[in-house]
Image (cartoon, rainbow over all chains, first blue to last red; front, side, top):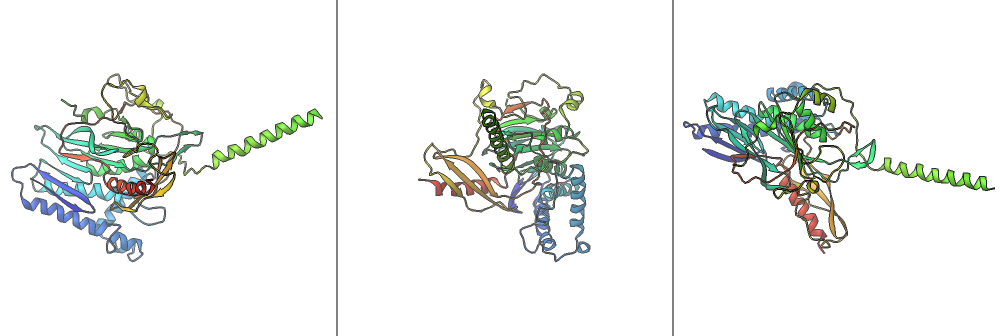
Length: 249
Length: 187
């Protein structure tokens, strides 16, 4: 069974292949996603994030979910030397870069608690899947950043999480101060495969902020692999990425 | 007398040299160098070479170095590669020169607004006026040589998949905004 709803401004797709899949499983996931949106949307005036940003809420009044997200955000900031930061330059909070992965992982846990073992949850291109060992893995694609109708890689994923961080920002010329004449290629997207989608998401966000060095950052993390695409359409992959590739038969 | 003329020429030339270099440095450059103190580390090529021996001999399509290369040209293409640098390229001369701001399009986590720069009738640059930022804006530039990770030109795959991972949030809005900018630029 497979269903998609538009929540948090993006399509959230849940597919469950377990035989006992029923409507209530999907309802649970979509209700949870709506709840997350209610709390964390930076663009809904009544959300907790908006109230924090407008000064209406003090730290003591944060919900348990908000506290947890802040704690995880701080941890991620430490581990990435500040490249991941939920505080914007103007002082406002925007935890979107960590909430998505965190929420998808929680949703997947809800399904696991109900005994589901063969499913995926895809929210806006960040995916958590589950697959029994004796079955062929899920085949998931990496989107072509230059043509969103195409994929440029097919991945074999069982219980890992996959997250892509990217942008189409171009024209912000980044110069190497040691060689001003050299124009560095911008990274357009980086796809990270990790033990779960929360981990993949936060490190994809941080790696993307590092520009071309992002792929090296992921290379240095045990248990993570990545595929980084630059504005010229050249991709670099980490040294263990091959094990996730499904080659065209 | 000749001595004075020569000295003046040297002094003036030096003056030009100084002022032209200052122009390069003054070029808009949002670089904030961050000194690394991270765990885990961004490795330099030396430590990476020691720590991760390649399982097979990668034949890099293009050297993964920080100097600009033209990988699509240097690789003898065995299959057609889709190295698309910009969305919807237009034939030369279709646009009027200038700078055009597109509409501000909703990408959920914020708005996307692009600015199209037309030179010689062609789209030559795209700048972001507004974009949702899910990352810090500081970028660390360094002089590490990139380690020898496998690189390749991306290629479209024909296989069917259950789901696709991509930075989809901003792409639709980007195209919307860019289209509106180009519509203004059409002659």
